[in-house]
Structure formats: structure tokens, C-alpha cells
Image (cartoon, rainbow over all chains, first blue to last red; front, side, top):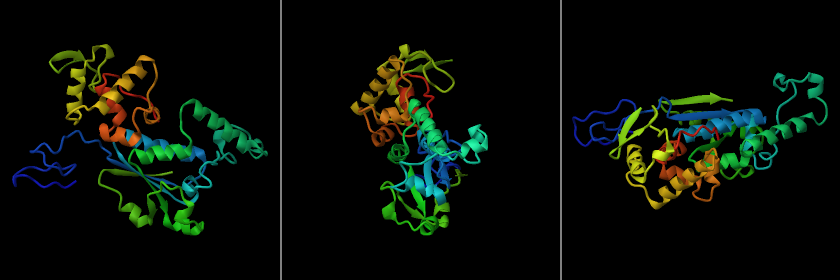
Length: 183
Length: 103
């Protein structure tokens, strides 16, 4: 962040903009200072990747913004966020022949198995995980266009959502040392 | 490798974590904290440090989630007490090894 120099001839750190001579810049800058993670899917395999990336970023001292769009809106939809499923149809990662994937009950079975494994490893449910990310200082946003497409309003969303952004506003959250990830 | 912290020479790894938690003292903690930008350890800091050390003694692997649910500190406060990577930094100050959890 730009810093008021105490003396005119003090040097500015090129990375963070703070004064080096007053010790305001403490050095040791990480290569990435902020993650912007776009989530476009509702399958828990995609969603958990995003949540672990976001929480992991905060644990490493990086800023994080999560931006939920399209089917990702399910993750911050108050009525759907506790009922996300594994995407199994057409998913070669299930290691099953496709005719088995489409059998009735398979999606529920695969989701329950995954939930059991995550519980065993101490991975929190989606709602608790989002709260952890928010409490750690991460920010959670919905996509304005996707919400209009799905006829959603802020009232339909989890109350921890910081706001609803357009794509331009979202890009405005990027910094010189941030990374944008699309899931 | 060796480092001199708070007037004592201790074994640390290349990231500055104590290799033996048994070498830890409160004086060491204070000095390590200053190195991480925490000028003074308050009672709240010590409560977290004591919690981390007691969980380590029980052989428990720590995670951010566990700390937040511990009843010792909530996540907002934890991030305020130990800025940057709170579990990494608190573990270093507590003389423990770098945490390896992904949660």
C-alpha cells in the first residue's frame, strides 16, 4: 500500500510500496499476495477444491476473494448449500462404467461416501467452511449476471455473502501480485 | 542449523522452526514473536501458545479448523493475534514444527 514517506529521500519498496528506510516494509514478500477464485460449478469435487484453496490462501497470509457464478451460485444459495452432490454422470474419475454411474441412487451413494471420507479427515461441511473463510478475513461474492439468469436476489443467498459484483467490479479486486483461478 | 535466539543457541530448521520442542522457553517465544512482527505476547497469545503445545504433546495434528473450534480462541481473533499465516506463525512461536494440514 502506498505509504507517506517520512523523508523525501527515503526509498520505496518496489513490491509493496512501503518505506524501506523507516522499516515500514519488513521484506520477505510472498510471490502471490492475493487469490481471486471463480467458482462456476456445483459439484462438491469442484467446490471443495475452491474452498480448500481459499482457506489455504488465508492460512498462508494471502488475501482471498471467492466469486460464485453460474452453478457455483448453489454454494451460496441458502436453500442449496447444504445439499451439494458429487457430479458422477460422465465423470471418468468415478472409475465406474458409465451405465453404473447413471443408475438410480448412485449419485447419493457417491456423495455419501465422499462426505464420510471428508468427515474422517476433518474437512468441514460447506456452510462451516465458508464461515471459516469469512471469519479468517476472506470475502465471498455472487455474480450479478448469473443471479439475474437464475432469478436470485441477495435475500436468497447465505448471509455471509459480502456482495454481488459485475465481472468488471470483480477484476477491480485484482492487484499486481494476485492470481485469478477459474474452477 | 543453529541460531541464537534470546541469548540461547538452539537448533532450527531452514525456515526457523525449532527442531526440538523441548528446547523451547517463554523467552524464546517472545523473541520469535518479535521476529514475526508481534511486539508483545499478551495473555490471549499465551492461551493459544499453551493450547498448541498441549495438543502437540497429545500427538494431535493441528489445523485452522481445530483452532477455531477449540474454545480457546475464535478464528477472527486468531488472525488478529498472529497476523500473516496464523497457524504457521503461532506454531513457530510455540516452538513446534510447521503445520502440515490443508484445512
